[in-house]
Each structure stands twice: as C-alpha cells, then as structure tokens.
Image (tube, rainbow, N blue to C red; front, top):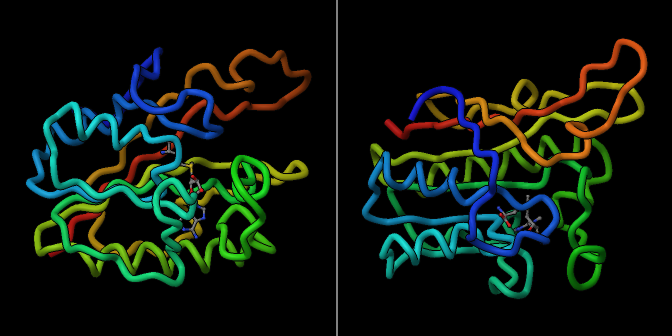
Length: 204
Ligand SMILES: C[S@@+](CC[C@H](N)C(=O)[O-])C[C@H]1O[C@@H](n2cnc3c(N)ncnc32)[C@H](O)[C@@H]1O
C-alpha cells in the first residue's frame, strides 16, 4: 500500500447503486495490509465491507449502520458493541448525499447527512471518531475514508476541520473514478474534486 490509491473499477463487492458507496478494493487492501484479527465496519451502507470481509474469510466481522439492514445502529447514541483491532469508517460527506428518507427509510434526526449545518456535522463526526477510537484495542487502527465538498461555491475541507481522534499514522489520497466531476466540462477557473482522503489513526 502506498500513499496514493487509484482503482478505476470499484470491484464486485456490495451494492454498486447505493449512493456514495466506496470501492471494495480500499477495504480489501486495508485488510490485506494490516491483517487485523478482528474487524468492525461502521457506516456499512450498501454492504461493500461486509462482502469483502466474508470473501477474506472473516467470520467474526461486525458491520453497522443506521440503515435498518444493519440493525439501525446509531453512531451518535449507541455504544460500539465490540472492541476490535481495526475499524473502517466511511461516514456521509456532510449533506452531499442525504441518506435517511432518500436512499432508505424515513428521515432520521441523527443521520449525519441531515446535520443542520456544517458545524453541526463536524461536531457530530468528532463525537463518533472519538467513540470509535476509544473502542479500539491498544495498537488498533481506525481507517477513516472521507471527501471534501463544495457548497454554494465554498470549499469545505472535512479533514482540516475535524479533531484528530488519535495519532495520525498515514494520510492516503484515493483517486475518485466515475464521479460526475470527472466527466463534466467546467468553464472558468474551477478545479473539480476527484479525490478522497483515507486517514489511518493508530491507538497508542
Ligand atoms: C458514505 S455511506 C457508506 C457507504 C458504504 N461504505 C458502501 O460502500 O456502501 C454513509 C452511511 O452512513 C450512514 N449513517 C448516517 N448517519 C448515521 C448514524 N448516525 N449512525 C450510523 N450510520 C449512519 C448512512 O445510512 C450511510 O449508509
């Protein structure tokens, strides 16, 4: 694994039409590289991490999401049910895709993508990151996949605005493929976003 990841195809894992889903190769490469004995995925969404974990032979992995398919686990209110040595977390990128009430079920007040403002979103994400980090075993790792976004011409750098929940061990850039901004022609001095960040925090 190097500090830039680029997967032109997302792979066969999970539901490719679940909005905001990620490539299974990210999770596959993380699990093959760090080889954790125990694995927790939060914000499991379309089941990408679940299918990767099963294929790699994890019989004890846990996958959670507010989506009823994953038990309706609420990252803001519920406890992390297990202590593991690796967590993959792929939260909403603010309100870029609104999940509850649009992708699934009814609108849920604790859906991070329904945060009332960007500040509210960052405050909630900080809470979740700290909760995840404290659930890890010593020497465990939290891998956070997160993008940047623009709203009404303003650039929001989520990785700049969050509080780091532990020691940053690696900052990996993941190139985005098959996103609208990659295909669209832009006029003027506008730089489309075609990357995401994968931050690896290690619990000391
Ligand atoms: C970017 S998607 C994850 C996509 C997933 N990695 C995949 O490949 O399909 C973010 C997920 O966060 C979930 N979510 C939003 N707020 C949540 C909360 N408070 N607790 C748990 N899950 C939440 C949404 O239901 C959505 O599935």
